[in-house]
Length: 428
Image 1 (tube, rainbow, N blue to C red):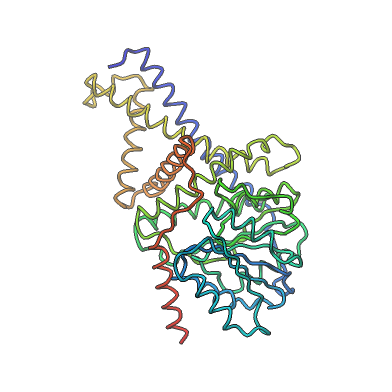
Image 2 (image 1 turned 180 degrees about the vertical axis):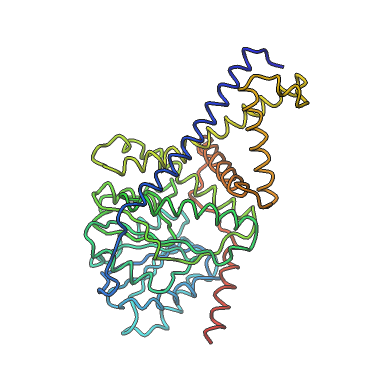
């Protein structure tokens, strides 16, 4: 199949890819361990929150919009300090009717200000955020956005408003809690993936700042993003502003005690839609900000950007090359009749090591896919799944296919609506 010269090159490239993958993962684990030793962030949970404008971007959200609005009122933010802005991207359902009816039912003296901005055409979430932030009332020190398909946990909004009394903080995001973590194997994979990256967000925030935010619950100091306007066809609007705040000299932090509730996509197809869109946004985000890795003014944030660039840009291609050369290696050995233990032991040591590694990786992924409990099986399969997602997102970028006009996942809304209805029944 291949002569010895070619196989030496294949083996070398496979080994190089494997070393690259292991080095990046080891660096990530070591960084989490070391960065987590820094002093944790503290804030006064009794102080009065700062004035805030909370933006809710909507598009065909009739199923979940009313519960979202009721949930915000239930946060008990001082009414005179809160402005709610619903910006609708040309909904074709009853979203705006529901919002208008709800607004008219409020007790004006005891409720926050509510504004509705109607967009005639759906141009993407970033366009909506740019407009809503620019039109927010001038007295709001905090500009926040929250997706309609999530629910803020008790006191999350209040504590966000309190955190910004610390003048070093420019942006804050919260921790996701899934309301249906056991609904499918896809949601279990999502939980494993989130656990690892939550640890990273915490460690990055302790060292300096995190460049990845959750748009479901993200808040920004107006002063920190005053000079920044979102790139409107690039996704990751939440993370764009987190880095913008850090460039302005403030910290952008993930606070795990702040939480929001969200429904995991209940099947592989809907999960894939969400993940690829977000992966594309983050990949472009880190590629666009790679220059700051070499900017001495960024301090420790340079280390964080370098690690995230490695994880989102370099790592998936190293995995892809490792698999490609691994299959070439296995195919060549099979072609040349390596079928028995006796013949295996006659191979050079490097051949034995590579073949053993190939078999172990395939076995772990197979066991992980079947959900069989074995050391590293589920972790390996979760990791592999996310590398595939990143590669798909890279392919879409290279082909010029942008996902900034996100595809809504109806099943997520239905799951959240069921959750809302059960809570209403429980409260009554």
